[in-house]
Length: 267
Image (cartoon, rainbow, N blue to C red; front, side, top):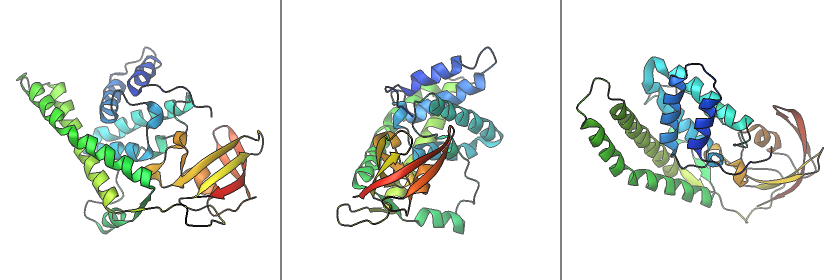
């Protein structure tokens, strides 16, 4: 898919609303406002990551009965971004509620304690994101104070939105802290790789067009296909893992099966 010029998330969300037609889309608008606030109005769409989507949608459990409806809106918007070419990967599968286990359960603790392997660059990016979120705390507090000053608590949507934003930011900070605490840094340049593994740089040649693409194989928390970082959990990532130079793999895409030749593996 050809990546289009960078666009802001706030602009694309407005276009998406207009594309909904004359139907009542107030619920869609409310959810998109929340999502844009979470990611940042000046955020470029192509920089969205699977971990951010999982972090945001995972907090929808607190919305009670509305969570499924809000999740459906988010999935629809993320699928729209991919169809229009604003994101190289379809991020909608990463929008899911956290229902696998209760907080404090053995399965939850196991997921939290699992080692997360990151490149040095990815580790720094997550650190920068956490620092930015912590720096935003003061602004959020002021936002809550301004909204509370209206004294109308019966239908104070700005106050509710500000408090929800605060909760989402704090949840994201906790998630980043857990990810960074359990992370190990991938060392590059010291391993001769006979097969595609985590941390490898792989060059793929599309059989039909002959076009070559180069990806660094990373975990989903660091994935950003437009920046050359491919998740090992993505369809293409799963297809090439553990294969050697010269192997051909088939990947199912919305446009049909695509065959790739692994032409180079490096660090």
